[in-house]
Image (cartoon, rainbow, N blue to C red):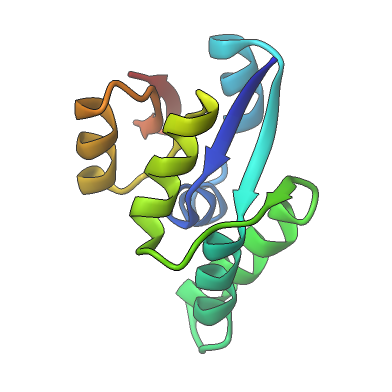
Length: 122
């Protein structure tokens, strides 16, 4: 079974524009274990504390992630923690952050992103 580490940008994107992301990931990679790092959860919590649509999307993203496997992270930048965890465990990463996706692909880490409302694995 594959492990997929989720970034806050991906969770918020699928909340903002609902898709069949779960089924799409299953179709592209097979059975998977969704994972959220503590630092990503903290990032979502910080965003959720505000007002407006972005905060609402973060709150719904947190609710979705409550069913994911939670894993500890270090004190580095969130993107660095995601890359490190993916490298160490051989996980894929689901992100809508273009800069993070480029850095992950450069490190030969598979990235799950959204293209025109559908999941793409690169």
